[in-house]
Amino acid sequence: MRSDEVILMKIVILGFGAVGQGVARVISLKREHLLDKYGLQLDIVAVADRSGGAVFDQGLDPELLLKTKNETGKLSQYPDFGVEGFSGLEILDKVEYDCLVEVTPTNIEDGEPALSHMLKALKDGKDVVTSNKGPLALSFTQLSEAAQETGANFKYEASVGGAMPIINLAHDTLAGSDIESVYGILNGTTNYILSRMAKEGSSYEQTLNEARELGIAETDPTQDVDGWDAACKIVILANSVLNLERTLKDVKVEGISQITPEAMALAKKEGYLIKLIGEASQDVLEVSPRLVKEGSPFAVEGTLNVATLKTDLAEDVTVVGKGAGSIETASAILSDLLNIWKAS
Amino acid sequence: MRLNLVLELLDVPGQLLDVLKPMGRLGANIVAVIHQRDVKTDEGRVPVQITIEGDEETLNRVIDDLEESGIQVMEVDGVLRREKITTILVGNIVDQDLKDTVNLLNQLPGVRVADLDLKMSDQPERSATKIVMEAREGLKLDLLNKINEIGALKGFLVINEI
Image (cartoon, rainbow over all chains, first blue to last red; front, side):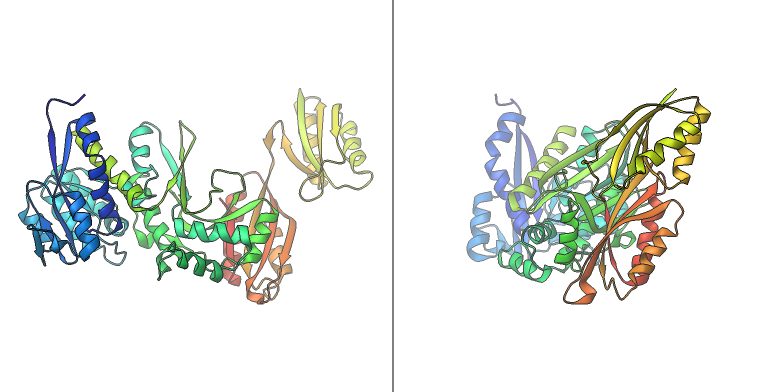
């Protein structure tokens, strides 16, 4: 049944890499479904990448955006509405919109340009949905205070665990329970490497190279293998789920590059696997290789993510899901957009 | 009152008798003993379940006496008395004096290294050791801190349980 009244949400997407393109695809795929079920129409009124952007207040065509990006690599080539050298901040200044989807490449040094984008949008009273870990891990308090001041929605489910629901699960579904701690496998690349090492008995260097060839590890895998990606995510969980004011520099981080086949073999002999675990509680904030029992929910293979929330009423709640991927991550962004719509 | 105990005994002749005799001497009645020699723990010890009866004071005395004489009391009425803690260290295990590492752990009151496994690598600094420790209930956090301290001191990567 189609609702009588169609509500329009005007969206600006900043960043058009894997996640940004996933968002466009998901909006295109779910157009009819959203209209039928919620009477909601998501119009992409502006998109920007490094080249510039495309702006059209009546809504850009998601499929044409994807086609333009794939064929030319530049959104500024979008027919009729492409603009060269249009910066994100300029777009936010000039375009009329309801919600910013901030998915520019993450920066864990100073969080820019995403941090400025989000602060501007929130200060202007616009809702923000993001998958961008860097600015959240560095300036969580600043961002949430900016949202509080104007009453804008600030949602970031996609920043931790991709499609794996964790933040909204803690805030909404587990409302009323006190969450004492959270820990999980929050990085798919390292989980892939450690799973392969456990299975094949191969060395860390060999397995990393294999992961690179398969495109699972990036050419420069430092942020993943040294634990910084997982560290960003555990900081976000510490802030959002445990209400602790923490930033990236508070995390004790140990990566996986020192894990040897010998250590793996000893662990397996005792019925354990070695996994890179992020843990946050009142007293602990760390990312480190840990022993998990074979056959436990944490014995997941491949690039899967898993996380456990320890609560007072519901005891342990554990979720597993795809931690990365264009469409998977976009699914979390879509759910944030819908939650904003539901709350309005 | 009755008390169910789970003990872990070394698999050598006379162990069970050494445990049971003092119980009678202290005035506790032995209600049941379940002892299967072919079921063993990872460390090769034999778990024994014993139910004893007596007044509270007597039963407490029995437990104290068992622990004083070095018997591993694992559970009392379903409550764990001892926790097993497994850790793996990666680094130059042997050069960094393995005996000293074990001693540092054993020095903690209520902690005992129960098992140790070593795997050498072609490159000595990439060797690994697995250490299984038993700690009295409530000591786990102290022990984990101590392990991390030793790791930092000796340049080991410490891989603790979740």
